[in-house]
Image (cartoon, rainbow, N blue to C red):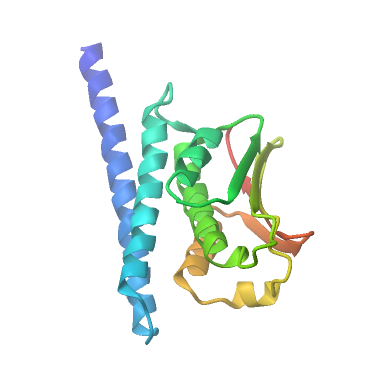
Length: 203
């Protein structure tokens, strides 16, 4: 009887994960369709590639969760390593985090944000040969929250106001995800472009 109840509980957890994942994919594609209505110039191959990466990012989060002891948390450092492996790039991505386990639902949001930031960095941030091609991602745990930082070391001449007003789907996804997580994001210049994201977490 206990084994049956345990199997039922596990199945419900799996069903919840699948439903949640499909809802996120549906929302992303819905935003993409809406975005295309107001974009007269677009590259279909580029759009498909970006959405492939978004779906693969969600898959990595869930795969990492399935490999954890309780299937409810994700190892942050391992996730970022797996995510960076999706990109064929010579840019160095360094991760610093002491306590790395993040609950699944929160990590889905973080995954979406990091994927969009990485996509944007690889496309725009290091256009000059002399740029120091390095991205530093850190995670710090405080009493009731976590602080995620994303630092583009080589990106020194960026109009921050322009970034915030950008209407591309990537920026829209970041802003929407930040709101859904009830998090706060700041963008500053500090010898490069620095994103700081403060969010509630259970580590």
